[in-house]
Length: 321
Image (cartoon, rainbow, N blue to C red; front, side, top):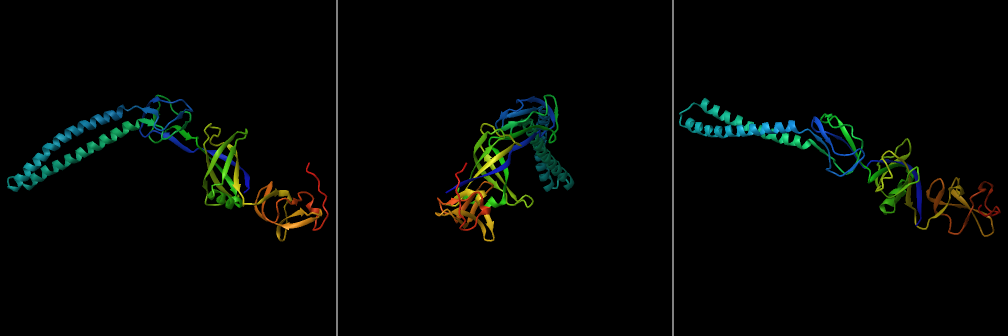
């Protein structure tokens, strides 16, 4: 089984990216990383001044204590007035007032609990951590700056190991790529402009639409990028290895001619005469053609001077320079 390489242009893309923003408004107390540092998920990046939220928590806890005490008394009063109302000792209006007081205090207690939960959440949000493993950009803020909740981008984190590489593939290669992928026979190597290589690429995405303007379909691969050779936004060359049919033969593209019956080649028979052979192409690119049917292994294929040939034309074979 032959393998064939498709050379393509692509771009490196971050595997994961996030603009880190504060979920609370406050003054930045600490920056806990160096610009460009690699971090792990949950590493502490920034601390926002938690004191306003701690004060809010203390006030809410005090309110809860007071409202809980008042509620306990209100529950007792409601029960007492209910009995008195049943005995006709107090009016309905008086009893309903006690009932209302109790319900208002129940609501106050629940509100206090909600404020406490919110204050605790704000305190938690005052410590800003990395959402995933990655490499940080330059910090956009310094100690003492004011971070606005949901507005200020503090830093950007990118995962670049692994990394994505996306590249457009001409639509005529799509069937071969799909077939190769199903047979786990698809691989790729990425090269940078300086000639560095990143191997062990794996196709993880084939788009579901062909771009009608370019006649290409987008593919995306992941690569380990352990040495961080690739960087998001970088232009790369992709060498995509696909399989061809078993027992297929490869000839140079310049050997292929076309007539009304389709593609053909000239082979040289034992009498050194040209013979036209119609062929079935399995795969092709600018350099080589993989022939599924029409030529046998070991036959001599004409690669130069075909325009001067017909069937039975005598051929002079020259050694390759």
